[in-house]
Length: 253
Image (cartoon, rainbow, N blue to C red):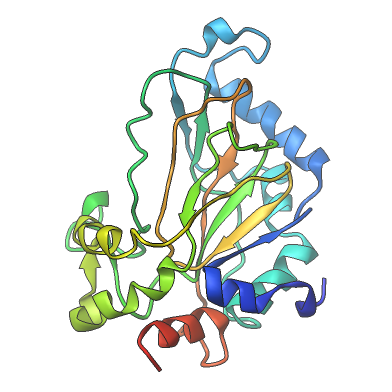
C-alpha cells in the first residue's frame, strides 16, 4: 500500500484515519474463535453474556501476530509515523470485548491513553503523557468484528489532538499523569465534533496519541471484538512525521 493511499491531511486535521482491510477478515475470524473461548461465553447463547465488558489479556499467538504485521499496515505506519520510526509489534494488547447490555460499562469516560510509567510502574493511574509522546507513536483500534453505530464503537473527538499540546507543554519532559491530563483535556475539547470508529472486521484506525476518545454502551445485538494497542516509536519522532507535525501545529507552529 503506497503512502499516497493514506490521507495524511485528514489525519492531521481529525487526528485519525481508517485503514480499510488492513488485515484479512479470515484472520479476524480465527482470532475471534480464540477470544470467544477465553471469554467463557457461548457465542450462540446470549444468556451467557452476563457482563457488559470482558477484558482479555495480551495476545501474541500466530493469527494475532499476522494481523498486526501485514504489509498494508506497515506501509500505513510508515506514512503516518515516519519510515522506520516505529517498533514492530509481536502481538496485540488488551481486548475489551463489549456485549449488548443495559448495564453501564463503567469505563466510558473521555480520556487520552497514557504512555509511560510514573514513579510506580504498577500504578496505571500514575502513567503519564508528555509533549513528545514518549512511549507512544499511535493509539490503534483493531476491529475484529463488524462494528456499526449500535455496536459500541469507540467515540473520538475529531481534532482534539490539536488542543492537547498547549496543555502538555508547560509540564515539560515529566508530562502529566493520566487523570490530571483528562481533567484538563476533556473540558478543553468539548466543542470538537464526535465521530464513531465504525467499520468492518479487518479495518484499523490509526489515531494520534493525543486524541481524546471514549468507550460507550453496547446497544446492538452481537458482541464487539476490538484491540487497542499502542504503536511504540523506535526513537524521537522525525521532524517529517505527521504525528510530530500535528503536535507542532497544536503548539501554534
